[in-house]
Amino acid sequence: MIYIVDLEAVDTRYTKQWKDHVPALLERELHEQVTVISGGETPQATTPGAFLNFGGTNVYKSNQLQQIGELFCSGRVKDGDYFLYTDAWNPTVIQLKYMAELLGVNIKIGGLWHAGSYDPQDFLGRLIGDKPWVRHAEKSMFEVFDHNFFASVFHIKMFYQAFNPNSMLIWSDELYPNGKITRTGWPMEYMSDTLLSYKHMEKRNLILFPHRIAPEKQPEIFRDLKESMPEYEFVMCQEQQLSKNEYHNLLGEAKIVFSANLQETLGISWYEGALVDAIPMVPDRLSYSEMAVDEFKYPSEWTDTWENYQKHKDMLMVKIHHYMENYNNYQFTIDQQVRKLKDDFFGCSNLISTIKDRSKHA
Image: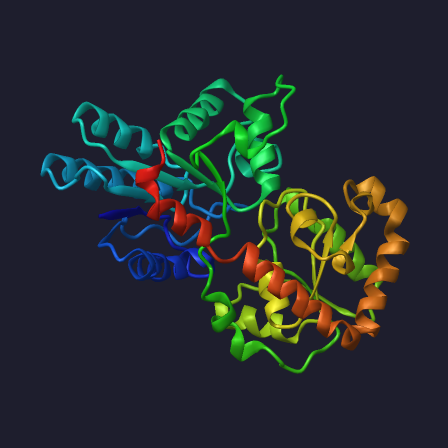
């Protein structure tokens, strides 16, 4: 049996698709029964600048904990069962481990890490920082998981360094054998089919900012570019209150998806843009460095601070102008970028194989 302890769904985000896709994927690939442990309905309004409602998410997790406890009380959890947390930052995993060990049930547990206080640019990192309670809580959750899944090497290295700040060792697979840390793409195999109808739409001179309006996304840079380049249309998607369909239509019409992010451990929106033939314009830092082809990366120092942006603004504008005026010359490179992302970062074959081979891991 595989139990999915899922992440609450927001209609405009991928978490909505995961509700159906992840259970169906695991059943199809692993040929095992899958049970979803959902926390029920939660407020759709997220805390400004965040992915979740900070009150509602704890109601959701509390409901999940009650269901997990009832599963143990009824004796339904058996040796060999696997619990997959689609968001590893879930304190109920500690209580799950408590019940399993005290009741002598030999289970395996895996979790997908999205973010946490260990990332200074994340919401938790900015508001809570490295306070002992949160840092020790995250370390405890990491230790509970038999398999910690990360979508990029950048994310793994940042996580490792935060918890080993004085270590002279650089992270490598040898430091955590037996799947304790696994780099895997996220379960987003559905995305290319979902966006197929928006591909080959007529393009216009449109540049999108598809990110949250939060300090680590540097929206002020995009706004300044908009003022400086009136010949092009700049749209900040989160200001528009768009439906998913309206957002995808904008992606289909855009020539560029722009990022000046200071925090990104994967990046879904620029993949969505590339799938519908928008040029992803991203800085050479964070997860972008390992994921983007060279033609779509600009030097990190152009936007790593507001001061540096001002120094390099003219070069950034020249690059935007070049992409816009030579858009038709980049179709082959966009296709190349899509293949790289689809094969390495938006398909979860490593996650599937880890769960399938769980009996081989200590």
